[in-house]
Length: 233
Image 1 (tube, rainbow, N blue to C red):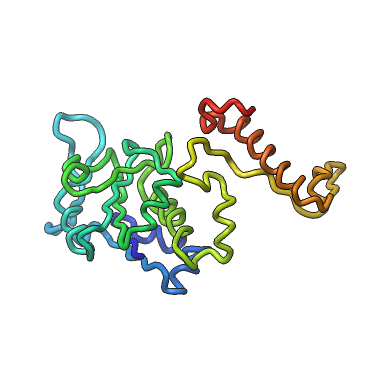
Image 2: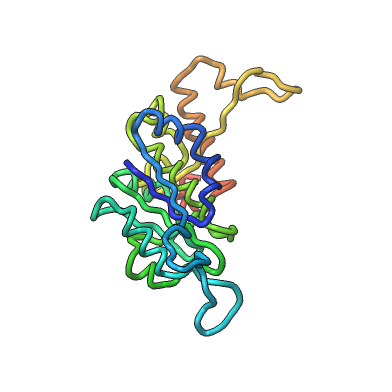
């Protein structure tokens, strides 16, 4: 599959896309990534990408013309997903990552300043996504998060694909989600803190049950919102 990222800070992506599974996917020819400078799609000598908001208010708003021009230039498929990364979007989830991984081309528009002209969202984008209920300075970090999460689902990128099934939120279709169980490694005794005996017992069935219960306990502690009305705990 192919990702195209539209941004006013293309230099940002020299780091995130050069490591881990994203680099592996690119080297294996399983994913392609194009990073495009929004200013290259302006028509004035100052390469202007933003302007003051109608109605007044603080900050600047990204103009529609260069964004439409950029998307129309880089789009190679009529069914491409065009995603605006915005604090006002719906929350990015594992289910959304899985959905996007089944698309041939994903175009990511990185928001900045006070936001993006709403006509981009209404007339050009197929989705508006937020990576969480907090504010960051721009969509570049969000774009890197989305590319990483989606790339994990591309066949052949992750070495042991069955490990994806054990990740937190690994079953997007499940009514109730949970975080992953705790992990331990050697030494078995560190400063007097021992790993749970069951993990070194060799009893695989007992280990499986412990991990299931530990995952539910951790979910209850850190993310009770994921449990809904589940009364197991």
